[in-house]
Length: 447
Ligand code: GLN
Image (cartoon, rainbow, N blue to C red; front, side, top):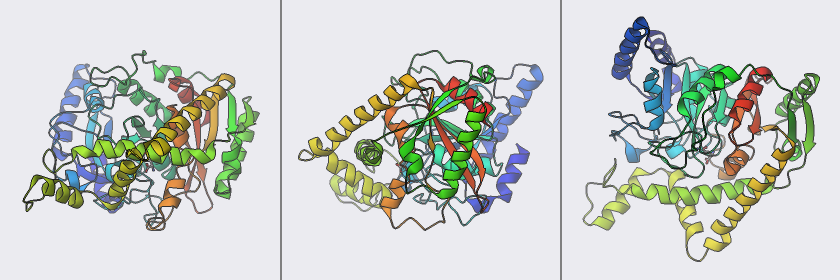
């Protein structure tokens, strides 16, 4: 613990932590030490873990990096935190992220952008930017993020780490501040596949507090890692040929396709003609869900409250106007619009139908293939401030990560060396629903 606390002190300028839990981490570390001496310690004994600041931990502040929740103390722990503590992990603090996990660069945080440790002028990606930087700069051994449309995978990619989004329904969302409930999943950001497998094993599985969690048994992911089978891999042709894809990422991926073939895997190009529909469907559905989820922040129940309002309506209005940042307001407006009576059929309903189509297309691919290969992001990490003015550029950058988010499949971002500017590159593999065991074993062999 002392080592990581020193790392945090030395890397303060990266703005990865919203708060370090000095006291509770110390208490927990001591208790775990005792258990280790008694031989009763759990699976994660002594693992020092950071959590994204949208995951509730009893008696600790949780803000989702929003002024709206500044100072809000969680009255209970999320299921994922309970499971970490049960297995004797030490939770070292809460990590910076985009406000309410809305963003892809960590720049919408009320507490300012986190910075990429490879070059502090660059974004770490988002929304789980703080989680990725914390692992990248060794400020904790592993971190939890949440992934709605890429928020674990893309920051992991920008920071050269491993980011796993499990199947929708693999891990409980109880106590995780909601962005878009039919997409949100907690996922680990780690430096090794072993750590990802171990964390998934501890976190996954049925939970009485979240009925969307699958009752499927949780495989012993760490033990299954050594399985090294030859896989049949589909490369989404349109993603590799996309004009938006940075040439260095493209050539790194092409090279790794050659390597995969040389190792005996079957790799084939397949066409995926729904690519243009991914980002629009994603943003219609997630903003719709967000506008509903965020209606609970009324200035009465949580966090920020305007003190001058003279009526209840004015209290709602002023508290929300002051508490939410620009990006969040934009999405609430968009979501409210697509759900409104006159536009529901044209946008929300349509996007649901598109989602169904995408899911069917992905399922059909998996009838013939074990894994799907694509880039994670179209570029490597970009400069802080460069894309903030252009929402469309920012949203389009999610094009490759939102596919498994829409279809619910598990997906992983794996490091693929550095580019000519020494910035991390990355590749994404997607598996069938609940085949994280196969995905992780393949990833282990791949790296
Ligand atoms: N960048 C995407 C968005 O802004 C993904 C965010 C996420 O996965 N939380 O919606």
